[in-house]
Length: 202
Image 1 (tube, rainbow, N blue to C red):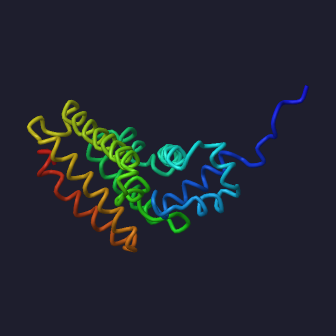
Image 2: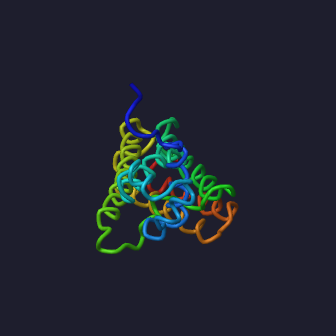
Image 3: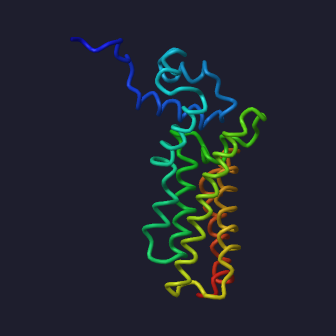
């Protein structure tokens, strides 16, 4: 017996990737269903059948971003031997990612819902939690540096994490406004100059 219904005539993974690019460029509210279906190569009924609704599609797109282009921070924090090297790599890798000419500029999680309608509070809260997760990852890496001795035990880990997270997101905003990679690298240079004052180690 043949399976019931007609198979979907599109590649779901490819469609999701195209939706991610639309949300990354336009934000959640700026991306209309027409924008999404045009980029994904499907019609509205197919979008709803495959993803449920616009918000569900957006959440999947953010998760895809985190597994791909948005994974630079996690990789840097996990792979470098000291907290300082981790934080510096995090900033430098993201500068390159934010200014990649073939991709939307900046960070999708930073820009996708800076303004939102009350009806989309759930989307806003979802992105806030994504950014809080990022903060916790940075803070955990600084505290690991304290336990391993490359950051002073007396250092204010919370302030350090907040400072470098703020620099990271500021780089994203500047990249979205068209500031070039070399200028952003100079900002990273300056941010790292204050590391010894924070960390209590040379």
